[in-house]
Image (cartoon, rainbow, N blue to C red; front, side, top):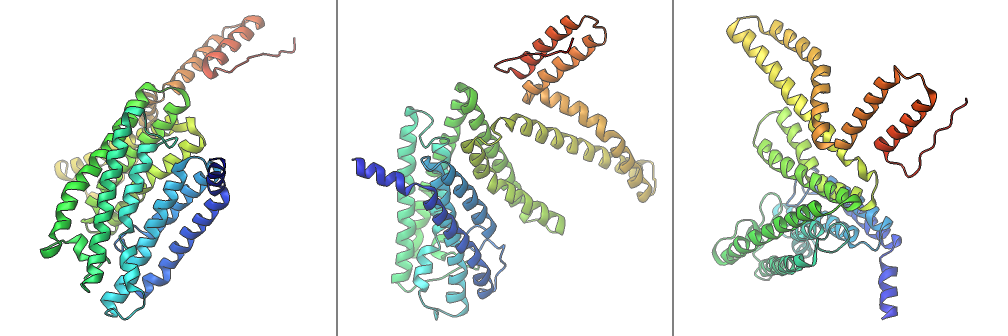
Length: 406
């Protein structure tokens, strides 16, 4: 038992994390020649995720695994990054082999087996959310969710493997433009069974994901201190992902450079939000800045929405009702928005801090009250005592001392 435990601890080491991180980096770099070989865009999904996502996910997993090797979440993130990077490489290779060269390249069947690595990455990502932040379910009562998730995920992955092996054995390797096997992306005929599998197990996986998030939310309400801040980071990342990914999908059907750029930014934020927030929470790096981050994000989002509404309202009012020339209306709207920015930002930020960053709001209120009292204070001793009380209430240090040169 001692040898097994020692071997396990030696395997989970910064050196092992460096090996896996280097593997992800190599696989991500290989995207460049393989994308050129397949005549596809490097940033295309290619039947998997873009190469930059695999690299970023691998970076987060490497940092977590190297800094906290006993926490399994770093290794789960590294494994997910490896699967997505390998899937992307395989997608480019199978397109080059079976769509451009009609099966003339060597080891094409290996790429066909590796291409559905995105399915394993999906499973690992959900597992990371379920086991956050210390590699265990939120509570012992949620172990059944973990076992249900693992059972559904195993059947799902086995189904992917069977469909891929069946396509290879039957010499019926048909791909769509992105490199996905058509038996997986558009199951018909003899492969219709895979459609049934997806119809059953994908909702089961989604339910388990929702259950894990619900469990973390319930744990957040019961927790306090450091763990509460960790869960707050996870929930913030989940909220960003829940908003960013659907927005990116919606913008993907729109035309224009602005929609394409906005969709790319929303997709990047949505995909990277959860792993990055996990990394911050696990490593406890600037952990307690989450309240400030959330309040600032909400504050600027609200201010942006209000000012965009004011800008659009003035332009429409000036051009449609008052019949002012459009350039003049745009100039007036721009000046109005510029004049309103700071007053609106201060009022909105104060309201948001009062609700989402209460500690900072209370600190500002305490300091403001002390400044008001300081104007009329004449006794140095009372000022010293008042200052010590203010520091204690605002910062809550373990020890306070005030030195004066009287």
